[in-house]
Amino acid sequence: MTDQERLAKYLTKPINRRGFLSMMGASAAAAGLAACTTGSGSSASPSSAASAAAPSLAPSDAPSEEPVPSYATEGELFMYNWSDYISPDNIDAFKARYGISTFQYDIYADNDVLLATLQGGGGGYDIAAPTAEYVLGMAEEGFIEKLDMSRIPNVKHINSAFKKVWWDPNDEYQVPKDFGTTGILYRSDMLSKVPASWREFYEMLKTEASQKTVFVTSSADVFTFPLKMLGYSINSEVNEELDEARAILLECAPHILALDSDTYGDKMAAGEASLTLGWTGPLGQELAPLVEEGKAGFVNPSEGTLYWMDAWVLLADAPHPEAGYAWLNFIQEPEVQAEETNYNLYATCNDAAKEFVDPEILSNPAIFPPDALVAQLESARDLAGTPQRSDILEEFKQAVGG
Image (cartoon, rainbow, N blue to C red; front, side):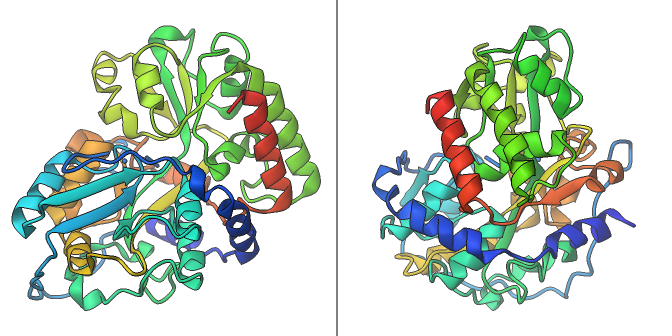
């Protein structure tokens, strides 16, 4: 089975909508607490061939060239996104090309905060980038617009493994942004060894990395660690298995420095943290100098891990829809999309972009997973709001102290 076939298999798993609706009710009360950082014209983003020939998805057949639509933009674009997730060079190029005087970039820490903001009626944003399993629920709740794909001709470059997926079976609500895995970021100069598995991560965070370990905050990522370490599915709904995961998380809580999806790269760069349960992004940003010195890196644990994809969506009642469509098409231009991967070190879903991706990045198995790892990946279902998981996550966060 090829990379494309395996990823297509994970991308066609069915949704569990109960989790989404339950979470939406729980998130509404938190809407007023959603904290954002505003920028104008600057970036703010997350959530990743092991040889000369990079392992990659088999290229899709692209349709013939089509004329690029013209966009009479409104001169402004309001984006709600993960921190440090867009190349500043691409933002500058977009502003210059489309006459954008105000590019407002506000950030959320995880999907729960994004949904709480939308549920509370806040925002007034044009574009967001939720994790893909949330797209169908967001569409059903009326939070995102159905897209006119004729206005986004660059979707022809998206690999077919990322089309007609379970969260958007008719390819009408989202444009794939990038994909990656949840794994272990490490500072090898602060550790006795590099952890190769979730089991080693577990042992090290309780000893030499105690109070020097960070977890990102999102539910699916937090549960990935104990469930995969125990040999269970990351989507487990078995009470006994979740109870075992709870015990592990609560055992780890006193040893965790922080729950942080935004600035964990800074904590590692400053030497406050030696391990993070997180994503590859900081490798090309805050940790780049340490990576060059061979002091930092990323591991996909041997027991397997979470495969995620983020997706661009146009939010309902977007105040600047023309600018929104211009962005959705612009960001999929091959050289523009390649700059995104080169900047944030997340794998592109865009076949044509790979020609312009730094060869060292394209051949890095932590970013573009090889066959052996792809076979162990699982995509998450929207289980964050199910009662047992919600209770465990809240108990864990309280035990950590945040």
